[in-house]
Image 1: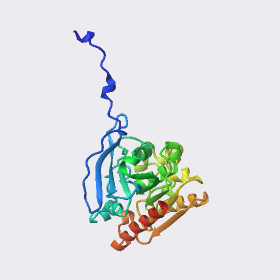
Image 2: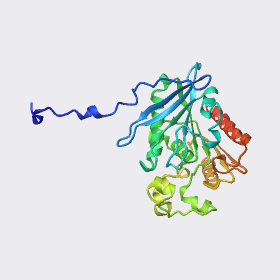
Image 3: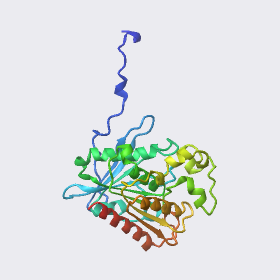
Length: 303
């Protein structure tokens, strides 16, 4: 048989396996009472690397457990999916293991960075992770109806945007959202910054996120801003922000809190005196208090 006589190749065989039915990886046990599934593929976007998440689970839980989905920071440009920030890297056990020990499942997903795709790809990736988790909730022992999103810095922006657009993305409703020092109104960053911010700079992190400087494209800037997505059916929010933040002004969280209150949505805004971005300048006790307050909020949302 010559090459020209060969039957056409079934190119569908080259398609990646469906993450909805892929076998789960083997578990490790990084802390007492904690099971960890690392590198679980939840989506394979066309033309991009497979996206994975780490899943921290309480061992021997009695019935399905509430779910926390954490979005990492890194200016949408970099970051590790299981990194809550430099102030938590020496915690033993780590923060996500502690959440699992407290009875929560914690999913830490990758998302496409700005070197790979523009917004809303990042938000859509979080929504895809939520859909995957809902689809496999029974297998994982998770109660996806009791889900809270949590993000830090750029991850707080994505967590908020995702929480506010679950109907649009089909991600399903969430019970609450925790945001640590995240941008919420990209068009107001220049107004809120005291150290100088050029809204026309094409190399800014926000310009790389949306594909244009905020000053040059009002429509894209608004579409990427959580404050513009607030409606009366938004979930409850907890917003923690350092009062001395020199990277993302605390006024950004104030703007989001004002928009939520204006829509009648429960919101707890806490400005932390003396704290810069990533809780730099805050005492160890103050950092632990921010973590504990967030866990209390999540527990209240998922009762």
